[in-house]
Length: 285
Image (cartoon, rainbow, N blue to C red; front, side):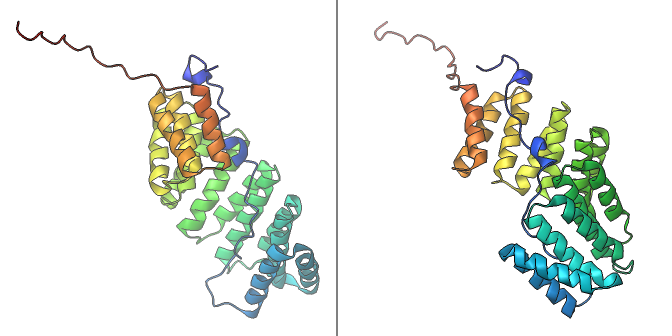
């Protein structure tokens, strides 16, 4: 049964319930420094590729590589270890490996050090440790000289950690920073819209979801969120349209099933109301 008020609609609202606890488990690209690739870089790339194919063998090889390395030379084998633990969903171990890799990376390699702190933050988020994630991400953002793309991506994850900690005002500011630094990243706008919607600021939510829609027109998560915002803002026809588009463009997906569930809660669309027409004059009168 559909609730009378949009605010009471029993929709299982998506995104932030999962966004602060789930992280992609795909193997990430290695953290790169601007210099030309070295033999160690090539070894790291091969190690990461092996992690996606045969994590058990990769773990043994990376562990031996870490044990043989000293000082700053431990950074790349530790990074590979972190990637392997990510594939294995061993989040605490991944966090520790990435953080240690960042710690031994020379200060002259700012881009790589920042990326490793950010990876530690992602692993901490996936492991449910938002407080530790925030610390790692603050460290990533504190590295001097990082570019706007890296800064914006770290701000998105920092905002996710802040949401998990209940610091919503700070999360709003973090999303705003991410949107300034990476204006072409749809996640910055999608998650910012979700947070604004949760706070009841439907105007801000609508502005941000419209940008996300322009950047990722076929992303079903954008369509789902657009529909939720519209429904809670009292715009049922717009919500129906958004969810119908998700079911159409992403058939067979979890997002499509969610959209269909939302539409089922709404029931059939009301029949259009036609304006009354004047009676037709009788011929011959």
